[in-house]
Length: 285
Image (cartoon, rainbow, N blue to C red; front, side):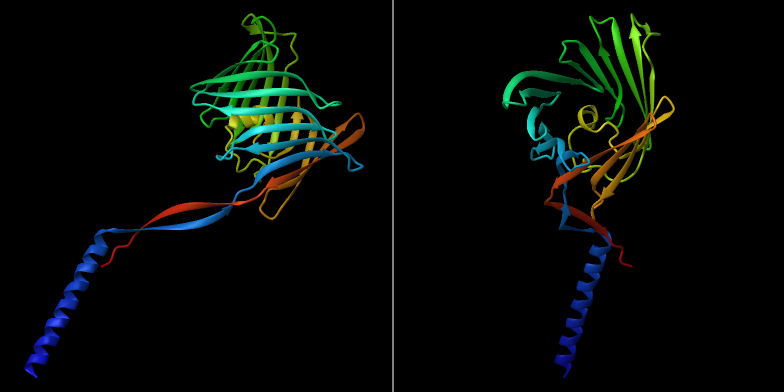
């Protein structure tokens, strides 16, 4: 009987010691575990404008690389190829090759290449007309100013951008001649009121400045646009279950008349697997 009691006491002592060690280790360390979650990644596949009769007057199709950046954009007019942009990304530059097509015979009509050279927050490039231009970025990578030469470098068009809460709030377009404000240039002040809903490019990883400059200036859904204190455009949207816009109605009131333009969006849907590393710290006392 004594042997059994001694063995039981020894066993209980070992178990208590093991539990104590586990508690000490648990209180001094973190548990790391990895889990995989799936998230829906939607990227705009096409944008097309319909007239009141349902005829598609213009359409844009997008292609992407493995990093969800736009690498090719094809523009159509009445379903005939009009021009394409092919984008190549480098460490300090972005190259955009543009090809124009004769819409009647689907043959290439002209092409040109624009090299955007990136130095810090400044991007220099040459316009298709051969004149120089500069884009300046803010700390978020959005455009803060575009300065474009209108001739041999003496006359410039300048557009500055202001933001509020990450959304574009206003732009000012002015002229500059020989380093001075060009008083003959009609200044244009544009105010934007934006919503906080997703844009078609919500998941797009194309650099913000390139999206703004070529595709979607506000990087958010514009609700109204005022030019020189006059409401010129109003926008209304319809969204899908994931919060992406499927339809934009642009309302333009002028001269006692109201014009409507409808743009619809289709998406390339899919899932991506994200490896999430969760660090769980638990103090055991």
